[in-house]
Length: 413
Image (cartoon, rainbow, N blue to C red; front, side, top):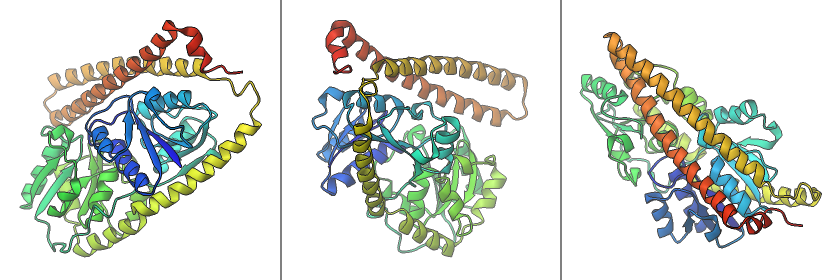
């Protein structure tokens, strides 16, 4: 079986980047031929290459025609659909709000899979994708790497903030202060702390409590740490046997981050640390989210999608078989323009926040945290704009140089 995986970035140690790296290697270890496409390559791409897997930022350099495309993110998904118009796609959605995760609507997409029940709402409610075309496949942990610690301490001594959004000026500072009150040492790892870790499994077992969300929270939980679901969006709480299913349903993520991050609430959650609960919840996640079980399930979905797309192709008429390059370029342009509008709106919001900060002494810390979050989002938006622009320019330049040859790829008799 030939599988092509897409991702918008393969630069830093972040959510889908690490997901793609680890999944590609796991599939290769099962004897499946894997290639990876991303418009923006970096450190993570290099690590995938080191495993003997082709990674490229040009669809023209992909070697094998895939049996199925395992797709993430709008732009790279459409890039490879244009490159392989006779291949079926499963589109995987990992984020409820990020513009890069906008699900494309294309007849080649056989199934839309969400990582949790928050993301399924984006597919069905926000984008009107039929329920029968969607599904939920929870995230996973590579339990061969993230080992369950031999000793779980009765009382917590060390805590870790495991997040790419934490920095010395936002909620990380609040958590450190709360931990200090209880005599707990708190450290942090992540992009914004300039301390990214390629192999967190080598670090997590040193900490009794870990503040994290989503896949990072799951990985920490699998080691036997007491996990407090938490990120720049807000506070979820300490994972326990009582709330485990709720956190799992929503990927230990955005939907659960409903409370503000204050020293008092952090202290309240730290005090819920329980040695027995840590071990039981670790066993839960190690059983439910094991990578090998995930790959078994994934292969079932792959085979079903390949079969369904084959049957669907036989029913397509000549009109439906025409390439959708006009729609593709239109959607690229629409997202590009919407991003410009979003950036301008974000600038206005930041200006308003700065005005409030200058006039008010009360609530200064809260406003500054929001300001930092907005700035981080704008940085991400600018990066995405550049990727969109580069991709669009590349396609249009090919069209300008040789329009007949370019269009011939998409309008076949």
